[in-house]
Length: 199
Image 1 (spheres, rainbow, N blue to C red):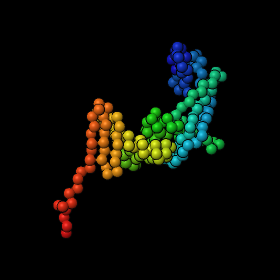
Image 2: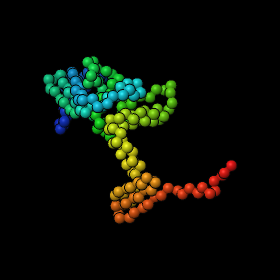
Image 3: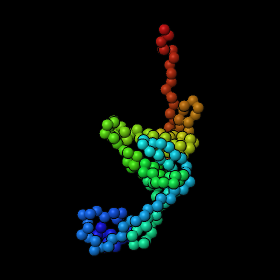
């Protein structure tokens, strides 16, 4: 709070609330946030996850008004609040933009939907389950073609040395052209049917 009052900062530093323990610093006349508005753009996808609704929108902007009359606005990739089609704020509604898929940890979204409950599985198991549900949510946002492309690229992530191109034939042969000019051909294991049991 002293930093907010006396600090020389490149960006605004405003406490959202001042705890009673800091009442003695009222001489600093710190501005506080008096109003916050969330403006959501066009809805891209909505689904029920865990214990609330997650809605992906194409844009998300938060505007905060402070007690000294100033207004600060910023584009964000996640917010809690009113959905585009709702008229009232919703505490268990999480708004995200497509950028949140990379910028926000799964656990941060999970937290706003109730998070871990101690009468269920372990924390890790519950988080893994939520992450799977969230992956399906993002798959709907990007569409089936983009989701498939990402899955293929994910499977190629560990190829060393780095690859330049990869081709897969219908019969399962994978040809990897590496950036260093080498080529590797991966063939499916041959099936020897002559030694199969014929009971």
